[in-house]
Amino acid sequence: MDLKQYESRTSRPIQAKVPDFQRHERLKHVLFSQQFNTGLLNHLARVATNIRALAKSRDGHIWLSQLLPHKRAMLYFTQASTRTFLSFTAACQILGITCNEIRDPKVSSEYKGENPLDSVRMFSSYFDLIIMRSVIANFAECCAYLMNDLERSDQRSVPIISGGAGTDQHPTQALLDMYTILRTFEFTSPQDSSLRTRFAELQSRYPSLTKGPADKTYCFCGDIGRGRTVRSLSVLLSLYENVTMIFVAPDHDKLRLSGDLKQFLISRKVKVIETEDLREVIGEADCLYMTRIQHEHDKPEDKTFFDELDMSRYTLTPEMVGRMRDYTPIMHPFPRNEEIPFEIDKDPRAMYFRQARNGMWIRAALIAYLFDMDGRIMSKHAEMFSDYQSYNEGVLA
Ligand code: CP
Image (cartoon, rainbow, N blue to C red; front, side, top):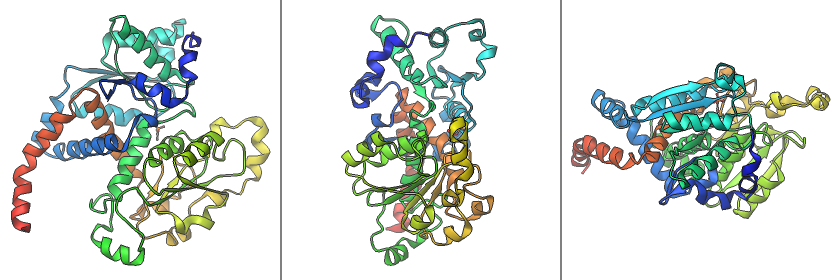
């Protein structure tokens, strides 16, 4: 595979790349969190919430499934995935998009030596969207450049969505995390905040508590250095005012917050705190984001370090949950190992299963947006729910 041809483009700072992934002030490809601003995040969250409301009724479900029946998506996931793969599949199905998949390159012609860049170009001949996760660093980004080059020579070119790659970034995980945070801190949805009716009471207990993602302390715990989800979400959270981020990680070069991300966050006026023990900071978090230690990336020379590591510093216990704020959501991108014991699942603040389901709605919203269907969804939602809304306005007036 010759990815060197793209090196002059992949080696640029991310901000310099962002315009390459846009068309007419909308996203074409989705590769980095830096492609999103708060306006687009709020818009996608609104579209996602409209889709979930429409999908509840038979009529709304059928209407959604008739939006994009003329589109086909290829899910090219040659690195392991459960949630990203399945939620993208479900998102496509909601919108009526037909999906196909390759998960094991041994059952494709890559087994016969086909270059993965040729594979992706072939997919673009048959499909209208390619969603991918690869073990090859920067591969999704290179595929976006391949599509751009084809477009420039008037050949077929389709959007590329990264489903998370290596330790790079996981932009759609960050989207679903952000959607979960936006919903939770609205303090209005019965599914996302068991305390919705107690916001005034919460404010008297926590006087600085406000609605929305700004003015909050976000605590990330676990494998910070190798965690692409932490990297991508922290970039999105840095878009909001007065944000503090606490990073709790073992004192190891590969696990602690990387220097480049730390500098980026500080340049965005984020207050950054680093520590090695979750127990010391658990009461300060407005939002807790747990991650597992990604042992699949360990090197043999790290064995002694991990054998001697005190994991109780990075593991949530019911006693610690008892010291958390009443409203603090417990998030996790999953899969989990031992860092969140099963007994915590029943706590109303355990958000990780709802968070994963939010992934299906926000990914459906993103795909609808890429195919310019977001406006139609908003209009349909307004039309379907206007009677309900005017009834409520009448009753509440
Ligand atoms: N959170 C996440 O990306 O999960 P999968 O690896 O199962 O897709």
